[in-house]
Image (cartoon, rainbow, N blue to C red; front, side):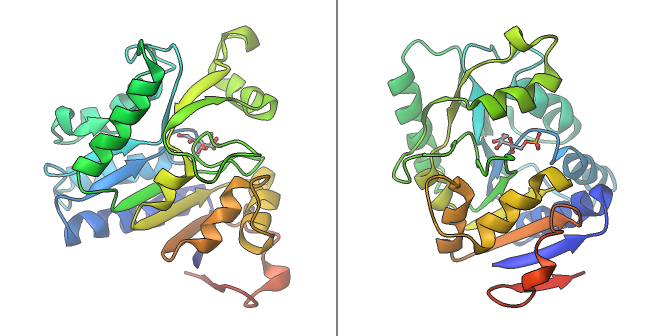
Length: 254
Ligand code: F6R
């Protein structure tokens, strides 16, 4: 596991964008797994800037998002499809038919999940999966007590997640309670993982994910078993790590 500590949110976005850009440079037809939420917003802006500066060819990539709210259509401004369009897709040259998110308005959830997995497989698997992390250690929407064996599936969101997501909705009642998410097995199948975290409220989850025991109660702890994980952490999110610096991971500030 590689841990890169950034001095602030902006630098975290820049460093993460550079890693994603390197992936696209080394393999222009990369399959990239994207995340939504507040954490990667700065990274998307940096990617768009790199694209606009002519430093990035995004025309051949394929993308798969981690998750989508259940029963939000893709043109709903709170949907993750809308988020991706607003923050990335509409600013770069990308074949929209090669961008994928689970479809929250599907009629048959089982079929949608199986189909999503098939599309990932047919694309050759995910080269680089971007992740954020919940305060409760969730990755994607795999909440505590997740089944490590699960692939894309329907999830019931934790109360903590619903409360954290409420900031994006007009009222608590509007916050979806269910979502379709890649499972841990899908995420672990990615060849490389890039996890980003920002803010002191993520520090405990980050500490436990790196040094804690591997347990479904802290879904991100499974990443200890992945052979190629890079974490780009804004310094507040990394604030609990320094006390055990160098013990089990290579930590370095860049
Ligand atoms: C988003 C996702 C979630 C978020 C996590 C952190 O696609 O899968 O796991 O990454 O909830 O959200 P923010 O970045 O808003 O703190």
